[in-house]
Image (cartoon, rainbow, N blue to C red; front, top):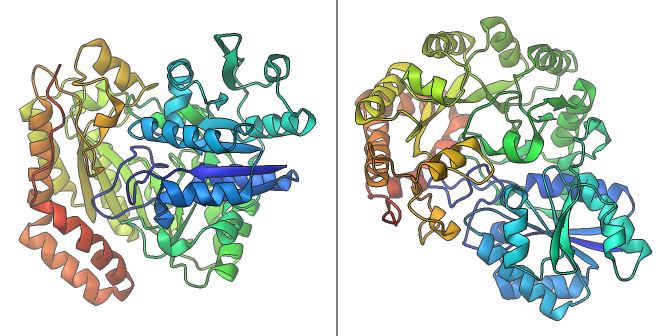
Length: 493
């Protein structure tokens, strides 16, 4: 049986798979990593699977439909996001028109949080596979292999799905999270078969890069973070160190052009012992590959030193705010002093740091926003991003904004601008969405146009030629936006 996995067409370079989907100012375009893991899993189980990433390939709807028509699948799996959901549904409808017997499944953060709403609005979608969907898709595929026409009785046996039945929406019990992650084929094997690594770019990594995960889930309770709340849960499940290192070897042998591996776990360092075991094995096996990972700003120097020795070049950390009360409000479970100590340790270990800063959370004022910018300059990360709070259905942050009447619109397409950039749709009585956006624009200029920062980048290019390609590629896109005013989103209803 044939299965088509689709990252559907939308805006050029629309980065749907990331936590906050949009067209990114730095040119970042994520791999369709979760579709890719499911692709490899279904192939391993004996199904004929094809993976199409339309935004990365530049395919429009017509080209995408031609490819699907040629493949003639029995089942189509469509990834979704909040700002693109209407477009994603229209793609599904177009597929259904020329393949009326195809079984259409939607996956992703948005539909996981809005399954009832989505199925009521888009009647041609057959099912939604919520949360972690690899095994759910396998059950659907095996059911379709046995039955030419699926019935409600068959669908009711599949955990983790929502579907239409006799004019009603049925929500089956949730599926337990997968514990054995070593059973998945390497995602890099899927990339090699279906994707072009040169199409993908992450501004904080050396180009070209390959993105993998060593684990799923995160125990922390940050109010804004969509993956743990909507997709992969709050329990960290990880691959064995041997399995991770084996994939490093595979990448090294099969992708000679790749300069870096990006470990896209929510927090790779959340299990300190596991992180150290992976690093020790990388060192023992003499892999010598550069990598970057997401981390919290609470890692000790000993672990950082081990990570550096194992090939870690940079850590991406969520600082979020320079005000302790706001960090407490968003359940960050992090102290400002810890962040400062982490930065000192990272510098000592010679690991670069990308700092993420966000304004608009509960308790935000113009004064706390200034504290955040001042704190960012004090920390001196290698790079930094400043964004207004982006809230997505299924998160505590979304419920807070909606419950207090702070959302400026209920139209999901307004989560991005016409060109696909992030839009600010949260406006509080204290700080408006326009003020949040203006602050972020000014903060970027204030951070990046400091003479000391510019000199440090020039020095970095001279002393570390390997960084040149990344810096130039990111800067070429980023600086087009640096002096432009961003759209502040729709006015409040």
